[in-house]
Image (cartoon, rainbow, N blue to C red):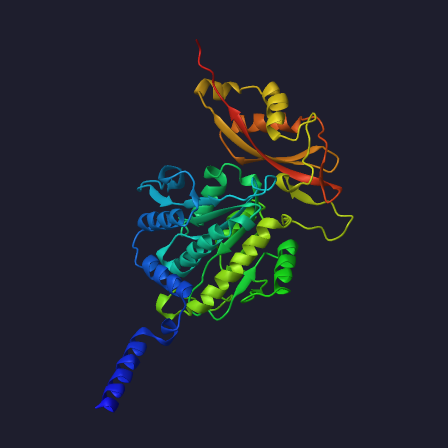
Amino acid sequence: MKKALLFLSALVCGICAFGQGYNELYEGDEARMLRETADSVSAFTSESSLAAFVQRRLSECGVDMLGGSTMNSFGIHREGADTLVFNNVVGVIPGYDKALRSKYIVVGTRLDPSNSTAVSLLLQLAARLCTGKVLLQRSLVIAAFGGAEEANAGSWYFLNRSFYTPRDIDAYVNLDLFGSPNKGFYAFTGANADLNAMLASMAASLQPVLPKLISTEPAPGDHRSFFASEIPSVFFTTAAPGADYFDRTDALEYEELNRQCEYLYNFCVALSSGPAPRFRVGAGDGEILTVPFASCDRKPRFLGSSDPRSFLTKWVYAYLRYPQDALDKGIQGQVQVSFIVDEKGKVKDVTVTRSLHPSLDAEAVRVIEASPDWKAGLYEGRAVRTKINLGVDFVLKKRK
């Protein structure tokens, strides 16, 4: 009788193990949490409901949520059709360093139920970063970008409309295509020398897993929006270039995903505390670099001030003339402009990055092109070309 009971007990355990799956049976708590979150994400049928879930989970783990549904929802108008509405979820984990906490590392993924594994990974990584925030010198922005099927509209909207100081973003970490099979682990930097050097430095220390650096982009993604804004970006994925990818939550090894999460935590902590990666690194000491304004060791100065707003008040608005045609039509708003202050302090390559009206665009360009010389910015002890982005406001005053 005793032998029969032992056999029956072993049979029941075997049946349970078969139903549960070998990997799931021996998962630790963090791996099981990743699995449960991925299952929850994959069950959503709309971006808006998934956005509410992600926002709630980030808030619960201690991320300071930015804006709200109004600030982070956006629409895409189609001629003769309804406006498509999408959602971003954005929060911040503040850094502790007084000098660096106003600089940001963005960690993001696609807000999509079909991207359930990467969304689950982002939520778990955010929870770990909140727990270890005493190690973060820069602030970390945690973002889930909507509208991925519309040419990465969410990340474009974040950089060009909703985030208050995109020029203070030092780097972007993209998490995407973390699905089955997840035997591989890859990193794509777009051949950024500084990020490549950082990956090599991480490989020299004890890590639970190491990504393989690849030169071929695994797939289009939100990193492209950051590349377009000349922000250094690294794309982490388990999808090898050219390989078939599918996101099946029941086919993943979550212990492996948990090890990848631990590596990403270590990478984000190191990135938040080290020197800002440069978007372009010169091939030789004699080459003149183009450096984003926020990355300069000494910012370019206009009439003694390194604050671009001083340039607006002391020069641009002092000499700006409201074009008559725009005045007659009552057009007002902001023209966004980028320009270069070269290594000699001269203003060059003035470009409209967001148009308002042809005559207003032209007036903003005219005044900036006529700027007196600046004092050039310095990077690593030498003068560099510095890229500056500004918004020039055209405001109509009401008659009394």
